[in-house]
Amino acid sequence: MTTDPAATPSRPTPAIHHDHRWQALGLLCLGVLMIVLDTTIVNVALPSIRADLKFTDAALAWVVNAYMLTYGGFLLLGGRLGDLYGHRRLFLAGIAVFTLASLACGLAGTQGFLIAARAVQGLGGAVVSAVSLSLIMDLFTEPADRARAMGVYGFVCAGGGSLGAMLGGLLTGSLSWHWVFLVNLPIGLGVIALSLKLLPAATAAGPSRHLDVAGAVTVTVALMLAVYAIVNGNEVGWTAARTLVQLAVAAALLALFLAIEARVRVPLMPLRLFRLRNVAVANVVGVLWAAAMFAWFFLSALYMQLVLGYRPLEVGLAFLPANLIMALFSLGLSAKLVMRFGIRRPLAAGLSMAVLGLLLFARAPVAGHFVVDVLPGMLLLGLGAGIAFNPLLLAAMSDVEPAESGLASGVVNTAFMMGGALGLAVLASLAAARSEGMQAQGQGAAAALTAGYEAAFLVGAVFAAVAAGLGAWLLRVPTQAAATEAEPAS
Image (tube, one colour):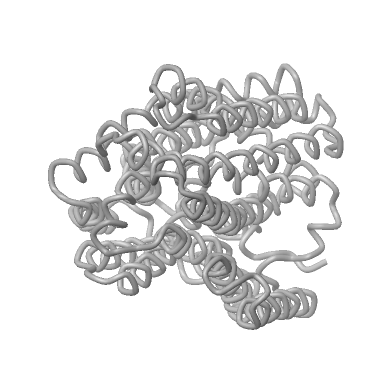
């Protein structure tokens, strides 16, 4: 069995002054925060982008999808490059690419230019996210310090969603949507300057210099083509030759990717991992759950602005309760639940709460009120996500060797991003088709939009329900083993 160099701790611990480790952690968290912010900060600005650049409802999803697809497609390759050429070097390169792409997004005046810049942003974000965890593992070798560092890192990742929603509303409402991207410039430049001082520069190559570039290119192009076909299916027709050919080519590229991974010496995504039951189940659950969650973020922001008439800042504040709950659970509450009840029950319970939250959004009326029609669903979705995320990662890593736990985590994160991109494309297209059909029947704009969003939320609830069922019935994780891993995973 070929050992993955990205997951093998064969490199020496870089030398860095002990007192500077926590400053370096703060710097890493600042860089990752910029990546996390970019997801929720853009969601709040979507209606303004739609109006300014004349996006259709279906095409607007590409502002999110272009980022997610390149992010997910290059996450594993970014980690491999960091192991071979130095984590600090790749961290600096990723921050620089992300910052320059943010400038391009902020200056965008056309749909195509914005989508292309978002794709480049995703590439930079993938590299930063992939090597940040490796740098933390390098900096903190003692188990207690490493657990504390990972807790801080997790809190920043979850809490960044709240800050992004509020900041996006503030910048879009007081300035313009361009500033949700331009705000990254001072952060990125500051991170680059401090990284040269605080981050370890030591590098050690893994046992192989092989890069699975072919695997990364084929899977990314395949998924982008599949999403493009889905997004445009409503306009050109689902049975049109163009749509069918695009889906067929995407399927062929995915098959080619699997063939490459089965034969290449050091694969980007080792297929042997999927022979492990829990790894396979956790990745399927992650794809389904991400499809529902990303659609919730995207469509609920549109519902609140286009139907309820909320200002961007009000939308950001509406997301605050859910994001705060997710952040609080990342600091250890989810780990305590796993220690008490194992993995399957918290995962199924969390996903079931997400199902209820989506069902509440699926009945949201045209003349909805925040306390009655928005807040209950937000609370349930935040609580469900906060409870379920940690058990999902533990399930994905429970069957693998310790040296490959990082690879398994990367695989499930990639599946999560890909599921989110494809699910959002499907549900956004469903919402657009339903809205167009209602308008053709004589319904008003608000009523037609609401009907489309309700249909998409309902299908998203089905995705989450299937994920909950698979997690409850197919995962095989002993409670004691789960409890043993829960504390360091928090």
